[in-house]
Image (cartoon, rainbow, N blue to C red; front, side, top):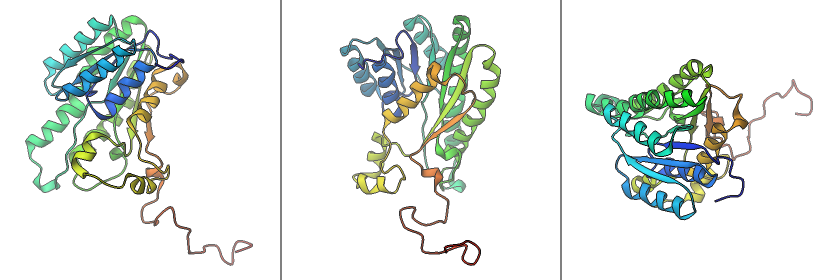
Length: 276
């Protein structure tokens, strides 16, 4: 545990926290003193090990399983978390699944699977959790979206659609809840190295891959965790309804402009600007 303890006394629920970004976010909140409920759908071992780590450091944590495609389980998850924590101050809607498939091959079942988990589950979990925040006098909701909401990658029509939906959901929900003391914002990560990437991509040169990103490295789950901490704190009290991109500068690169690392060979402005 760190010495700052910015989240001391706060009660936090992080969905999809058995692996990857969610697990990293949950650990960051715990390091800053929050009591944390972790949620998983399939990654029981990762969630349990995070709980053990938090408790071993003197923190408070518990884990609950739920299928976010099942609204009854969504509501039960909210009730379990609130009961264990004795209330709720922060909800981090991180859980989500991805897939890639050519548009013409996508099935209705695949479409429903992603939308049910990525947006429908988030929507109704928030609906179940927010009344407790309002009764307590306020809280924060942080939704995880993606750079896929802002830039296209082929074969991701379903995933990108869900992530863009989260941006719109965040904006409107923030307006509805602002007068009730609940701030709502979203985080749009770029490339964050998680276990699933290594399963799909296999071994690769992470240093070389990182050099293609302006920041010079691939992001890590704790990078998202630190931004979530900020959005949950009073330090961000004037940030409402926004989606903060955290991508190491990936979206800053103009398409078709070449490698940002190379010095530009063309010289524009000759004859018009002095010194060229």
